Image (tube, rainbow, N blue to C red; front, side, top):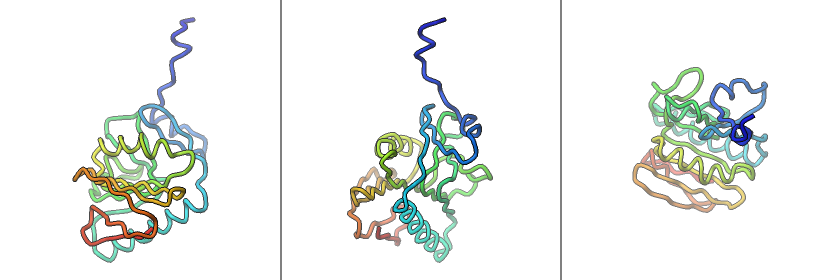
Length: 179
């Protein structure tokens, strides 16, 4: 047996995601699989509140965008089967990217709520993936640090806000959210 073969890591693809047992959730970043633990109550409370606030804004302002909470499949790069993400919140304004499987291409706005197990992925790996794939705005909401970091990739900005401060939404000029 070839010794090199023993040390090679399996490269996971989207096929592996669809082969998972029912109820098992995972993401793939550059062919590496990350299994996801069930979210905490605090995590779900933040996701619910953000989803409701954003959906109300979109509905009341006749915006063409659609919002989806996790689990919702995001295939960042259409011809790439080694990256599959389920952001906590995805806002997609180009409806042609959507089908019954999810979003094919970069959402306009992605929000990740940091969990202890997701910290390195949210702050490093996903930041890089979202920034290079064409996501316009990426929020990292960190309940432990009580802060939100906003990356505006179009304008190459990064701002940090403490919980309790109004956070401007970069993809909409007149929208602020307090976390």
